[in-house]
Amino acid sequence: MPSTPRGTRPVSASNPPPRATTTSRAARALAAASSLVRPAGVSNAAQAETPRSDLPVSARVPVKRIFSAESSNFFLLLGTTLFIVIFGLVMVLSSSSVESFAADEGFFGKFLRQGMFALIGLPLMLVASRAPVGFWKRWAWPGLLLGGVLQLLVFIPGIGWGYGGNQNWIQIGSFSAQPSEFVKVAVIVWVAWVLSAKQDLLSDWRHVLLPVAPVAGAAIGFVLIGNDLGTASIMLLIVFGCLFFAGVKLRFLATGVLAVAVGALLFAGTSSSRTSRIDIWLNGCTDLDYQGSCWQIDHAYWALAGGGIFGTGLGNSVAKRGWLPHADNDYIFAIIGEELGLIGAIVVLLLFVILAIAFVRIIRSTDDSFVRIATAGVMIWTVGQAFVNFAVVLGVLPVLGVPLPLISTGGSALIATLLAIGIVLSFARVGNKPAARAAATAPSPTATGLPPTQSAADRSRMLAANRARGRQ
Image (cartoon, rainbow, N blue to C red):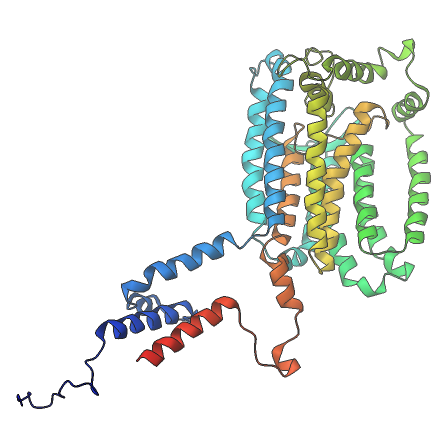
């Protein structure tokens, strides 16, 4: 029998040679499983000691988490918003080129300004989408106070200035803004915070009235003092929409709507311009009104009629050549109808319907009352104001002077609207996914006396580790 070195066991049938390949494979499986469940506190130096064989596995996990962090509602709202903004820039270029050239700004004057505002608003929207829900709750009061201060600046001589009878802008040097657009954002967040905090008390009309009515009424009152009835009307619509989605009783809302209607009629009677607009809306235009209040209305009708089904072609509008005032702002929808026809107008309408669907899906996906009310407020602002603009251009409503959100020119309106949508995007992120909601609403394992549940990925990793230990 051949001798064996001292300390070495002989190889026999009952003592097979060690399986180096199996052992090394088990070691690699153990290392991979350990790296996947590595605690968050492990240092980078410890991570560097991990064998290179598990690097592809650990690299796939962060990438998967990055792309699964947002829900489908997030991408639906984001994609629709980006498409509308890009479409709006194209239509601003088309509708404002003639007036920009006449004002010695070149054909691209207003378009370049609007593009600059979009480059400010879009990153701001994405930054806002990363903020947690608690951030917006903490800034509800400070944001409202800041918006009120900015709105009061419009009444300070040398800073505030007006246009078309509305005192609703501020200008410091070459910088100008419309504070009421940012007041809308502040009112939405604040009203949502108050109503969510008093969710169980809204069956009492006193808790509905206080403090929402005086505070929101003061914010709207500052806008009305500047004679901006259109913006004030949208803000009232926002407040009532938030109350509705908060679950306030309909009889309380009906009483408030009746009171606001009476107040609106009294306020409209204080201005001959508003009285003339309402009279034309009710009784139609006459030949005597053509050069006055009916000029814009008639030319908007003619622009829409001239577009037909397929339109005259992008850039071929006749109304924008000095015939239709505010062709790139309040009446840009008439230019869309003229250049892109009935089909283009319907596409724009459907874009805002898709935007509304995205908002509704986010509302339905959450159990947080603050998220639900704030999302509803932003939806009513963007989608509701868009349909008010459509109705004004089509003559269904009297002239109110409200732009088409995300499409019309106006830096303050674009940036504020994108900020509000960014807030909703922050709601639509990880915390509102169906899986996260199920995990949040599921009973605790310790409370039910059952062992803790594991995900499929956790079970797979544990099984791999157990098999590796058994092979060793």
